[in-house]
Image 1 (cartoon, one colour):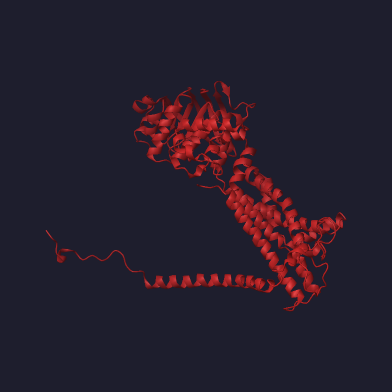
Image 2 (image 1 turned 90 degrees about the vertical axis):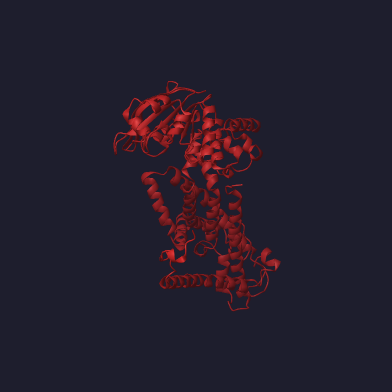
Length: 305
Length: 258
């Protein structure tokens, strides 16, 4: 029997429209989020734009990448920043060679072995170290390397100061990556009769490697842009200088500072082009390192298919 | 192969917490023993003491003896690494190594112990995968990552990995609790086959499963809130599920527990 509309009881609908107040709050929050996004992004884009716009002039010339400033006058167009690139890379790599193994071992100790007081103290020390300003690290190395040991200021002294700055970052990122390796995997390995150290080397580290590489490269990029240790611990030289243990060695931040002091910074001047060119070169090198980090991470990351 | 286990007066502690009290039981070779009981009663804890996996947790320790064919695995001269090589374990959640291919997962135990011979490893991988009823499903993709398999396949991969090192005993900690009924059936069938060669101890929350796969069943229970777990009854599975000696066992099995 068909039911007529009259026989249906009138029921209030269970669901109602979104209230005006909620719509208003939603709209307000949306606007706020977008505004903060813009406020955060604008300076970033601005900086990047300035560096590229001011620095691009000299970069397309091949001598920028293959020559130093040794043979050109300070107000002469020409020459290149090879000496500074070499210095930056050398000091960065030497720093990484020391800081990465140390930092990783500390992280492995903290995650896999550390219990009780020593671990807590270590974590505390790493925390403090990560808060040390770079100029303090530089002065400490100066006091140790130059004043106490009587050794010359050099690129290596810079590397040592950078090591102090890099270790806490490496420890932290490695620690985090090791901690997210599930204990299931360690147990699975132990249950196969694999000793602990081998479990760490062959199971835990490879599983976390992708993230560790990312963190290490970020840390490296970070210290390569450091300036304070350079100003304190090594002199500027306009020539390519490979010896990291003695003599003056240029690097990109140092070159920028040196040009700022000795040269004109007016737009269009030689000094202006050199400083911004070096700035862009440094940004490019760091971007390249980050890119390499991403690629490496992808390659070693555990795959599904 | 396939050794017997005798547990004598085993007390298990986590730090100061007394987790399991005075367990004595015997597991004959080529036999499936099921551990059942409510959550927190210590059955997984007891299982983990059988291959010294228990002490991986900081502060955990045991009192008493676990004899493998008469040899105390807790004797001070015994290397826990060797114990674990002799007594394998399969865990609740499938845990293949994410960085390794299917083949490398299976032979991981041997490879990490130093076996290098490719051909030998290939043969062992095939034998173990056949033993775990997985060979036909993965033989064409041995070099693909183990993480790409389904949950049930991953668990059988873990079983293959455990038997590839040719242990004497296989411990299984709720191996089917994360699997669907079809994968569970596959694993249960596999347990039936594996028991021809191995001594198997399985922890399960599923009483039907205990009834289906095991020859003898141990029922564990808590003595009371905050008190240690203990072994209530160990008997032939048939007897446990039809006419148990203890009233507590009968209550638990018939669902009148708690």
